[in-house]
View 1 (cartoon, rainbow, N blue to C red):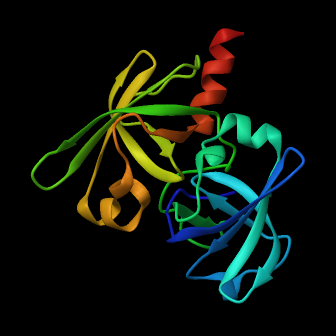
View 2 (view 1 turned 90 degrees about the horizontal axis):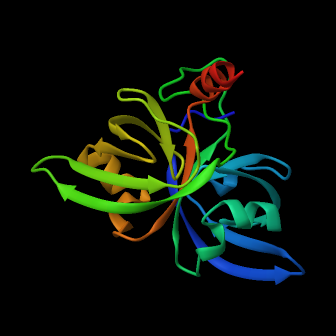
Length: 192
């Protein structure tokens, strides 16, 4: 379980393919606090630490993960939003995030709004967003500003822009998207 509050940026240092799996070696600011078998969200995708060496650790993505996320597009040098799992006796600063990417979305617009940034995304799934509701974009907990059919926008402050990988996003880039878990349950109840 995560909160969507990004703790730091990691850098992909090495990519190794083994069958259909890919092993990613990540350099992070908190590797020394990790342990084998720990869950870490990478652009919102929960992966298990399988190796640690100095300031770097290794995670493995299976084919299912690669097909449903943007991890397969990573290259050496890619910056990745990182969050360790939530501490149950701490504050929930973002929203309830599972680390299970629902789909990917494409960035269709970026506006510098003289003090904040507005990002617009389009996706193909049947999931929905609601204005002022929560959504997780590349592991970052955000509030939906504009909600449309298969599209939405979020606005972020300069701190978020600089301390996550939003500063690297361009129109046309694919992002990982996790819809609000409560909203998913409500939508399922209404379909029933």
